[in-house]
Amino acid sequence: MRGRHGSAALLAASILAGVAACGTGSAATFHPAGSLSPAPVRATLPGTAGQHLGGFSFPSGVSIDFTTPAPADPVRRAVIAGYQDYVLSLWAAVLSHGKNTAYQQQDTGNALGFVRREVARYGAPGTTVKGTIAYNGTRIAGIYFGNGADVLSCVDASAFHQVNAQTGATVGPALPGRLTRYLENVAEGRRSDGTWFVSRLALYPASSTQGAMCR
Image (cartoon, rainbow, N blue to C red):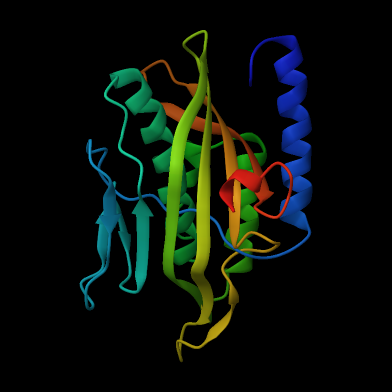
């Protein structure tokens, strides 16, 4: 979704590369942080109070940081809101072991497939995720014909872990692959009511050429 015919081919190649990267290993993904305030947002979970973001409830021990101010332009803010909704619905599904199905309305295509794979990884109640995940340098690379958009974000999931739900012991990284730090590239579509949803997803480890900007 990066322009017309040439950019469409480039995006398709990017998606294939990103899917390949996701399938080969383990380590982190994304978690949105609440309101679209003009200032950077840090959403923390003090004590056992838990966290309520965008209509979702998250347990204590999970922290989501969005460090990039929201755009002032309402259209661009709506695009970022669509990205945040995608992230929130992803982790709400994982943390509820698939009981929260809001993600089914927030994404399509390979992005939907990615969420389903992550939900399957945490399907058993014996494992969950804890820690902090940060989204840095989030920006809109382009908006196309008013109905499509391309969003980039650097994700730091080095402090986001898969844990034993009973003991709290760390089992491993939250996501498969080399995704402790990575570049996330999502394509979005616009609904008739002006809201946005994620239609495609590509993930590039920071160690790769494509993800080097997130090192």
